[in-house]
Length: 543
Ligand code: C2O
Ligand code: CU
Image (cartoon, rainbow, N blue to C red; front, side):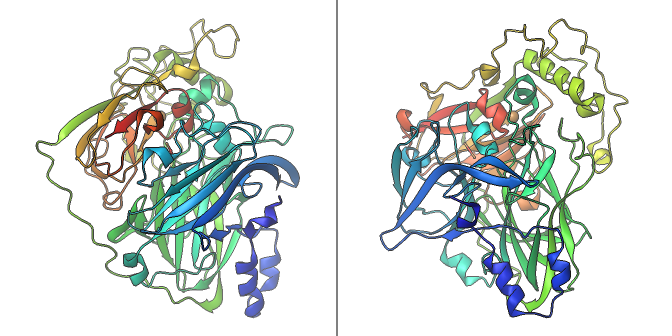
């Protein structure tokens, strides 16, 4: 299959030919058109067909092997209706086993597509479910244990949207690919041969696999022509390991209307929107001033992610308003947002995220060796290898936009060991080096059982290291009670399936309305995919 079979450029091109007033010359400039994933809905029988397959995608003019659903890269956007059953026929046309996980969906473990939902190469799997949850923008991606990072890096990811009556009653922009625009943002690295250069080694197991090229819907710095008025962006941080802070290049406000699991109570106006890996936010941007601008990714403080070119803002997509008017509006009130129930007496469960100190040390050494000391700026390595470390004496607010100097960092225990990474002599099991409650992921042993329909307070701690762990839980949309010791920001106070655990402790209030058996357990894990693949995941059951 070819790229054109699933990426539809017609919406943008249609707007162009219908309104010849705009400057075609400007449009024809080098910038690629933003690819829009094909919108697909269940057919009359409620069926959707998905094929995971290999193909070729052109990057920098060279054909590169990529993987996608129903095409060569990424996948279609599936639109489902609340309360309506869907049956998805999945065909694995890849040369290796995969699974299809529905990230953010509250559906039973048997159809959740976690690591137990394996589809052998050439095999098919049929899953059927009825989304009962509220309208939301979710996504689907592989979850083959130990291979998730590699398979996502190759291109497997697609959007899944649920609609309900509450959403339909709002007059939000809703012309797919015109004023309702998905932006799947991912970084990639290409090797000397031009192919995607994915590696799971000590460095990526410690800090994650990151690239030097930012892509939006699979294209580098594309352009989207949009009608004047309100533009709705459905943002997905689809990176393996990179957190993103998004902004408009001219600092115009982003009005956040929805988070992972649905609409917020009311819009939240921001000029910078941090997004963790796996998170979605929907924002509205006012573009009636007819001025082009970019959505950009600002530098972040996450370890390794300030390596060039990400030490400077990177363009994601150019937004080019055209002389057509969109009719969507930004309502003052969005959705009914229930108050968080009182948590006294609620069962508390503790999850402690840890990295093997050896991996931490080898990973940092490898990172510094490859990219210089600058790459580990922000880390305090003084107490390395001894588990609990103090917070670095550094004010994060001062680090926000600027490049960070390595001054004041303590690298005392580093770079002098005999276990230099990459010497090939270190026998170290990276596949089990990341842990939750002292254990690396065990496919055969669920860590605990949760009573269905009962609230639990999960206290997730990452106090043992200075890494960012975006923690994701299957089978639920939860509410954040506290995030890294602070009350959640307003736009993170609605329905979420991922919470930041960043050298501190975060608390979420979860409830599971469906069951999950030991054979098809739900997962809870770090969504830095290399941490997940190397053990920072657990399975649990709901009954
Ligand atoms: Cu987005 Cu368990 O995954
Ligand atoms: Cu992690």
